[in-house]
Image 1 (cartoon, each protein chain N blue to C red):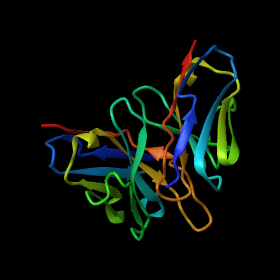
Image 2: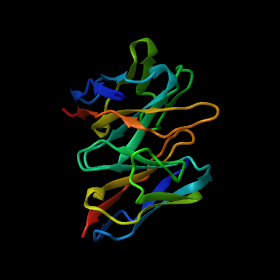
Image 3: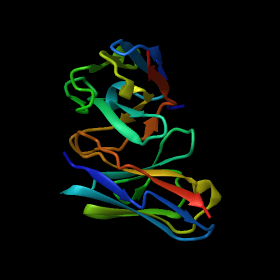
Image 4: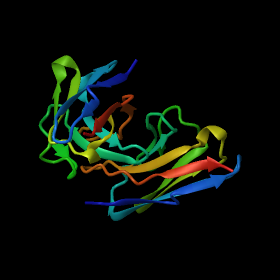
Length: 122
Length: 107
């Protein structure tokens, strides 16, 4: 079964750090680009960051640039999001999602994890 | 960056009604436009990609169309299980911006 499982969420104080993980199974992880999407309580979806299959290309939303770092370990079938200098407005459910990308094909985000909650509060 | 808007922000319709949601982009782009469905408390699910291609397993009452800056999602006959928030998204290149969502309810 194709599956993504996030972990690492929790309660952190403003200015603190947190590292999210996303474990992939059921597909060839190294063939896929991966992304993080978040959803603040009662709000819509916000794309956060993306990383290409081989980590050559990395993108961030302006709202997290300079504070968040996306990375992956294809040998461990895992995606990460290091979040530093956290703010109250970073409070959200964080989803990882996969996306196939090649020179001839660009897919949408077809598989999503169940999400992990990050709460930034003093 | 391209901004995505959706209308209406919410709607109520009767079972069996035809429902159309509009998604507009601030600039035209290729048809890398997706629609997602999110039921309350659940994970978003891909419905349509490439503006008009149904994801595997999605009921045929869902359809998508459009190009450039104007896209639509249509539910031909609204069912109780379609109660959800629907999001459009551009996925041609980063930033992969989502629309603000349209909440669909049953009247």
